[in-house]
Structures are given as structure tokens and as C-alpha cells.
Length: 325
Image 1: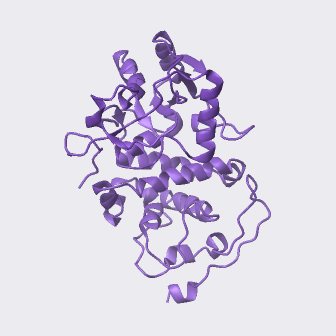
Image 2: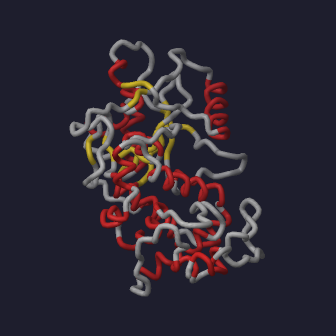
Image 3: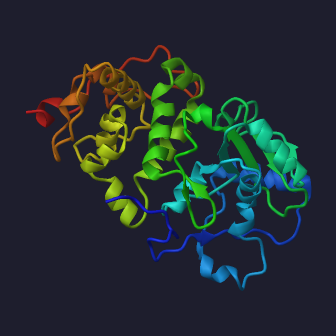
């Protein structure tokens, strides 16, 4: 059984539409609103069915994805990324800027600029914080007087180790197959060194949150992803992380908790080296694989200061003796 994008030909569901102001906003107010939404987490939510699009005179999802059509007419492949990709598979996450993976961000930007878009600065999540979503070389563009604080950010697909031949046509835009999307997010997260993870702590947590969203989809896709069998749809080196995400065991902590990244990055390398074979976690018991590294996965370990992970000691896992009997 495979996952289906919402609004595809194989499902009766429809992708929701975007609601935004019908009036142009002053540039300063538009930017302020955008930053405020990023800080508070209050982005757009796609709550209204696409069937209502025809009778609604305000900005719609169709206009949000215009950059995809413009680039396609010039032979440039794209896939939507981050929250927009999740929405196509049934997530209720908010959306912010539209992120698109492209073969060459600079060449794609030139095409959009000829269509009337203007290059802008990348929005920062916090003062002095580089937006790591741009992944070294991302380019942000907006339509002048577009009536929305959201822009389009072009990112080189190579930065996500993503092959743009892996794409499906969603109801409004090209989308990555869900398993390929999960593979790419996991690969990026697990490939982060502990030093990078500490220095870019907000970005690491944001990425972990995106991975979690893949496992909290609504409807049939949630039921498909949250199975041990779905590991077969992912690359083998991500199986241990997959089993943790779907596991039901005592003292469970999310992958964003301190220690989980270090543990899964270690297992990621061990699987690739043929030193570890992941297995589904037994329900109700603490996973033996986690218990092998109590100095890493200690549930009582103090959370490090923001952007700093040095000098922290880890306490042993709670209930190991009871959980692994």
C-alpha cells in the first residue's frame, strides 16, 4: 500500500486552499507580519476545500504555486518542500514561504525575475540567525504588491541530496513522493555533526519537527507511514529512526529530545558500515537497541543551553532493568 497525495487522481480528498489578504500590504508591514508568524508559529493554515476556490475572489493556493508553472514552462523541474509538501499529504501544519527545490537556484531565479518577481533578503528566524532552510545558496523572491508576506525560496536540490526525477504531479504543484521526502529530511538531520547540531540548535529542532510531522499526517497516509512495513519504502539506514518514531515503549522521548540525535546519527553510521541491523521495537518494552547506549539516551540528561551542548553529563536511562527484562 502506497501513500497518496491529497487531491490526487486516486483519492476523493481535495487539497485545502490558502486564504490571505486581498489588499497589498506596505513592504515594512508585510515583512513584520511574516517574521511575527515565523516567531509565533502562526503561519497560514490551509483549511478550506479547493471546491470553494471558484467562487472566492481572494488570493488562492493556485496563485501560491504559480512559480512552479512558470519554471515548468521554461523546462525547469521543481518540487515543493518543507511544510507545503506535508500539506499535500494531509498535514495540518501551517505554511510560510513556499520552498522549491530546483536544479540551479540562480538560473531559476532569473526566470522568475523575468516574470516580475523581485529578489529579497532571506528572512531570519531570530536576529543574527541565518535561515538554514536556504541551505547555502537559497534565493528568496516576491511579487511586488503581491498582497502576502510569503515569498518563494529557491533551493538547490543537491543541498538536500535530492533527485528531481523523483516527483509526482499533485493537484496544484509537483511534489516529492512521501518516502523520498522522508529520506531526504532524515539524511540531512542524521548527517549533521554534533558540533553543527549544537551550533544550529534551532534549525536542528525545526528539522526534527518536520520529520515528526511526516508521522502525524491525517487520514490514510498516517496509517500507512506508522507501520513497521513502511521501513521497506525508506533507505535501510533510516530504519532505526523509523522504528523509534512509530514505537510504543515506556519512557519514550521524541527525537528532538537531547541525546536522540547523537544516538540515531551513531546508528545511521553503523547501519551503513554493516555493524548494526535495526529491528522493529516490541510494544511495551524498552528497546534493547536504545538501552545499549544509556550514556547517550539518558532520559534524565539536562537539556543544553540554546546553541551550546558542551560540558553536559548524561544520567542513565530510567527503567532499563524493568524495560529490558
